[in-house]
Image 1 (cartoon, rainbow, N blue to C red):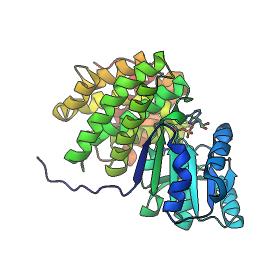
Image 2: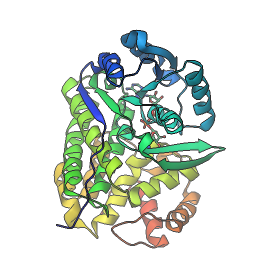
Image 3: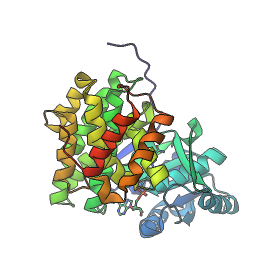
Image 4: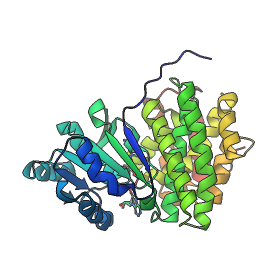
Length: 352
Ligand code: NAD
């Protein structure tokens, strides 16, 4: 076994059906009195329900969270936070809403409670991506890691099947990259494989029966484990390619992860087949790359970059950006090899 460092994330996690109703007690536990509830315009009704569940400790609702955490939206929320003299935030939603809560915590160091409603995993990380004047920057800081996470399975029942599939594949991507990471450790590798196993089992069931409570519960459990991997471990080629495609070509976050993952994995699998063998096993497949492609196909998720807004003429530039400032990866690569990975993803070919 290679030497390793393991640092546990300090978040408190409460998991179950209906745990949203415990938000008030968790605010009290933090010693706070005035919480600002955050959500998106699309989830405002859930935000209001949360506000009434919190009761007297809910100081207000800001339902303006949006994709990519634009700094002007954060400034609007900060004005409300100051006017209402809040002492904590409660973010209900996907990665975009969690991002707003983190942006406020980064500026104020106020404690955060997060109630995730997708499988993106942001609630488990000390990482914040913000956009100012169209440029996205990423910061890592201990102030950004939420103090409390309430995983309420009931809130994920409404996640539409399309977003369930791509968000689930987004979660799996974190775990796949964790098992071969430079700073991998045996604890996170175990969690990662278990997270993939839980999601690979649950997601096809949810596609058939979106209100299956047990499958929804398994999927959220898997997403939590995959989120822990994202927070603990440094990501490699797959995440780099997704950041390039999202940042420079404006492709949608979860869909991009879904399409690229089988191809980045197949590329790395040639170098580290042993490390990816438990992933293939968790997927019930001979190879991890093929297993991920087959899972995405089974979920009716997009398989090709051409389906999600990428233009063929952008592939060369994407490959160039990806090699200019690369993340560490278990397999060295050239620009031509990255072009080939992206071309396979563009066409949606099954990895060979
Ligand atoms: P999202 O938060 O943008 O949500 C997409 C849409 O789905 C929104 O309109 C939202 O209101 C709606 N939605 C969410 N949950 C729902 C539910 N249960 N029922 C019905 N509608 C629901 O999507 P996401 O994929 O969760 O997050 C993507 C963002 O998160 C990206 O900007 C990404 O960069 C960021 N992210 C950050 C980290 C990190 O560690 N910093 C990790 C993962 C993702």
